[in-house]
Image (cartoon, rainbow, N blue to C red; front, side):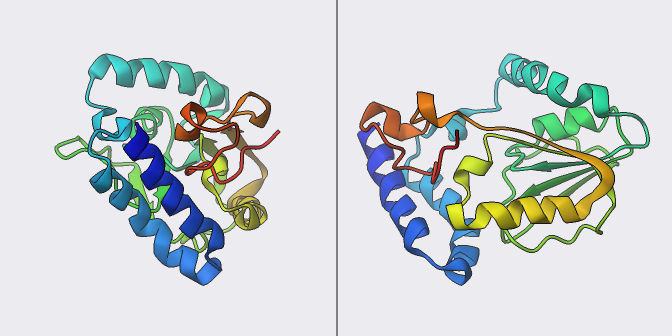
Length: 196
């Protein structure tokens, strides 16, 4: 745990000090580097147990389910291994999973209405006014505080006029919620800002 904390903390310092152009280069590689330097990271083990995947989807799907139908275009930011996105594919016309790297497990069946988009955190190749529901879970706390407004603007641009952005993020009053919780009273890892 100490190694995880020290590695993540040092990388978070790089992200916090980087300007926007530097962050565009760091974001696509920093998680791969974290997982390489912390081989026992929980994300390296996550998603391999079918029961855990089902439990996670059972918790997240109700957040969006009432807004889905067979004509819905759905976007998930930070989908990780894409288990929720694959589940949502059963209920909608199209799913875009938007992330800074491809974290899917090999040999997973990819639904025909699914598309993974790897982006730099800023520029997104999805047509404006084309998305019905955008979703993220445990995502915005990983954004550099200077990038939060541009993220919300990007989401607003791709949403239809009556579209929704549903997101969940840990509350700062009860944090920190990253690896820092074992060592500090303030988030010092990849939760670059926890919100109230």
